[in-house]
Length: 342
Image (cartoon, rainbow, N blue to C red; front, side, top):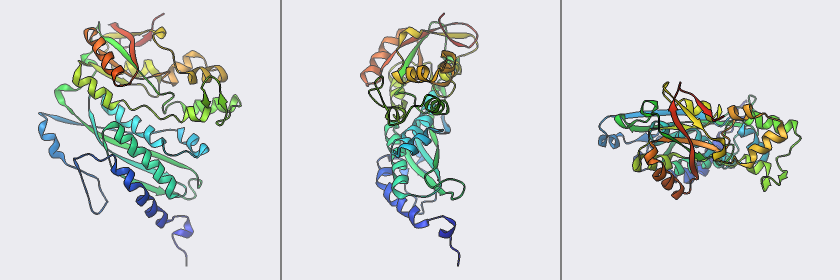
């Protein structure tokens, strides 16, 4: 007789993975989470929205790209979930939304319970860092479609913002200041180019590079910085006109999305020093500046656009929370572009 196990799907391993991850997921719980005994759905108490005059729900979905391939190569699976959360919740906070809850989806060639628990544990830790709850998810075993050590993950998040407090380009005016919020490194964008550089330059993930002070693999798996709680604190305590999450496409392209068509953002390259990993990628890989600019965050993971009178207060708040931030540029009349000073 032929069984599901004969086809490569291990239901018992999936059940064990669920048991292993339960305690980690519990650490991300918010008081609004309601238990569903069946486990088919995640429940969130919407009566929390009664304190809003006109609550708008915001939603975002993302993955972590080919960074998962490096995690698989190095056998380190407990931080890639943090990357996933960062990609989702920090898109939500750009409009001023507080991230409330997330769900995740993992597809793999073979369910290894400890590995799945590590991945989901990272997602739960990211949710804890973001102040949101991990309310559900799915793990799917795809034998034949993926190798036994291969997996991919994606997630979706929901947040809420008061309608008349939503941030966006319409608030940005000439004279505003652009603040740069430091990234923790490459984050989760541009890893196809990263892997190409590793291959063509003959670099090894276990290789310790003097510029980095640790191995290349350790540097590249550094989790994405999660900005949501810092940005929400900034919104509460200062005046913020817009935010921009610097992901695929680089600094200028993402910042331009938060500008109206009547202004430009002039940025000063001399205002910060990109982390050493970007010098490694550019130098060892022969990647020109133009390509670096449109592929990587170059050390700026988020931008905040604030009135000039609020800049000092905003910087003091962010730096006081342990998040390096600085004046990156200014807003001037223009055509909706972000560009570097010549």
